[in-house]
Image: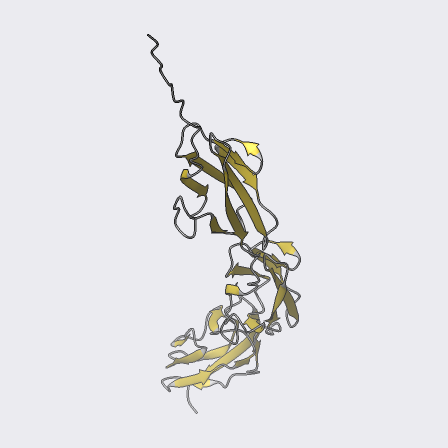
Length: 296
């Protein structure tokens, strides 16, 4: 008697689907689905490579990424503004293939060459800063020998240079009093486009020292009220007066240059000096004398 056993060996599997597909940084658009074979990924222009990871549904299938047999691969991207296609091929155990394509779009370099802020210290910009206004003036006192310029770009990837020095803050020496100094602030966007802002700093002319214009003082009489205001021209800020030496008895001078009081003793002319000083410590001195008589 003959028994017959037929052994049926299964055919090789034909599952060429992916279980998962990721791109980092990502995400995929549309979201991954095994039956969808075309995707796109948008990345910033600062991203120079992405990592692609692919897992198969059938453990017997093989994966190649850009013709390299692997389930994970770091892929360099093209220049900013370009598209990099990535092919993921899945080969089922029976040899059937499926190709998934991911197009990675690297953003173009930005063209923003505007400033976010611009300040000059000491001083204030005229007109007030706006990104579209390119030219400004700043007026400073004659005593200011330098100013600090600070400029911040709107795009963090832009490059700022102040008077040809790559920096966002620079101390700039000024010309002599009475002159103006031009300061150029260049902003280069990531894509290379440039914009120049200009600040003209006007340093005030020097202020002449004070000069006493009163040339002489009248004499006085005992027991008769005396009042004389000293005068001066020039100088910066408030003027302060002092007397050097003694005034006739009964008279005094205040800080505003007023000599006043009631003389008490007659005598020969009394000589003294007065000095006037301005806010910049510039001063002038003049000699005077006052004689006090017993009566008119």
